[in-house]
Length: 84
Image (cartoon, rainbow, N blue to C red):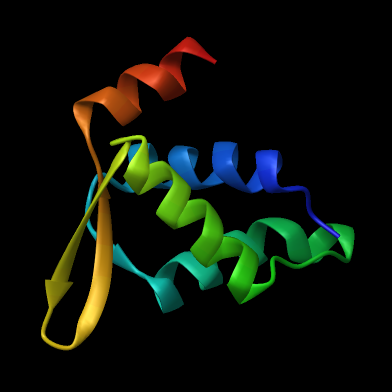
């Protein structure tokens, strides 16, 4: 099982790399493409918990596109990622 801290770092990496808003299915797809070669996967509940935690820290901004919740990285989130 993938650890919460690893998901946090990988999520920030994905957002910095793509530099666009992503919804939960896009995020899940990206993360599980990273973990599949190792035989691991990220549970949707864990992904959502990490997204909410990063949003509370103001590293991500949550917005709605149609009926889907989406997230985009903030400048603070980029700064935090590059400081890791």
